[in-house]
Image 1 (cartoon, rainbow, N blue to C red):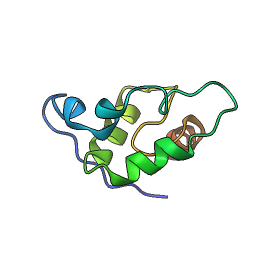
Image 2 (tube, rainbow, N blue to C red):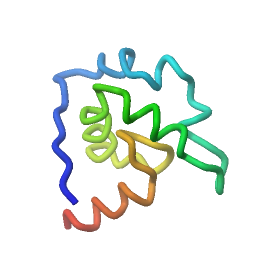
Image 3 (cartoon, rainbow, N blue to C red):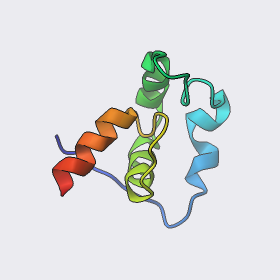
Image 4 (cartoon, rainbow, N blue to C red):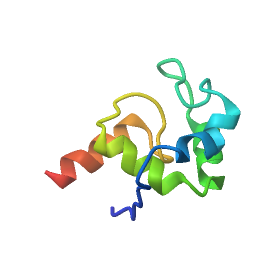
Length: 81
C-alpha cells in the first residue's frame, strides 16, 4: 500500500483541517470504539495527505491521523523498514 503525502513547510495546515473543526472525540476514541466516523471526516478533508505525513514523521501512536488508525499506520511503518 502506497500513500502519496505532501507536507507543508509548517504546521498551519492543522488549524485548517476538518478535525480541528470537529473536536478530538472522534479521532481519539476510547479503546475498542469505532473509528468509522473519524475516517469518514478524514475522507472529506483535503489536508489528509499532510496529516498522514505528519503522523508518520512524528511517530504518532494514538488516534486517527490522515484517515488511518494506529494499526494501519503501524503496518506502513513496518513495510517502510
